[in-house]
Length: 196
Image (cartoon, rainbow, N blue to C red; front, side, top):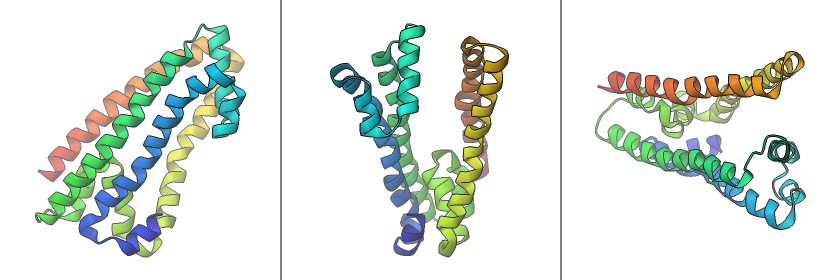
């Protein structure tokens, strides 16, 4: 996708196009997370496996609902909010980034400042650095980003060997606060000062 957009979309419109295209991932998550509880309720948990190909995630959700009295419907609705917010703000970020570029701000400053909006910063940056190799660059950077999931899975296994799911959830709560609250605020603040 990145290769096609780097060839077809002018620099002044890349942020918007990337935001629009990649917000589909967020909206897909919104649809999946919103539909999953209804599918489970009406057709049973196997329907989610066949619909979305995520047997492991559904098993985990069902295990939580049976063992820890985890409310699947409330969880699905809360999970949707994150992805919906990402989809909305990715598009806002794309429009803002393209507007700043068209008004004379340097592409580098705009990309650094809008990096927290992902599509208008991070994903556009691949096309700015090497339009011909934008797909390869995106693949490499996404691989580096996925390593957190790999190490997180290994860490969860280690914690479970020496503790319980409650210990995993304690670590997750602390990590969530740092990753999703503290870090984005820091990055957004740094970006504001860099663009200014």
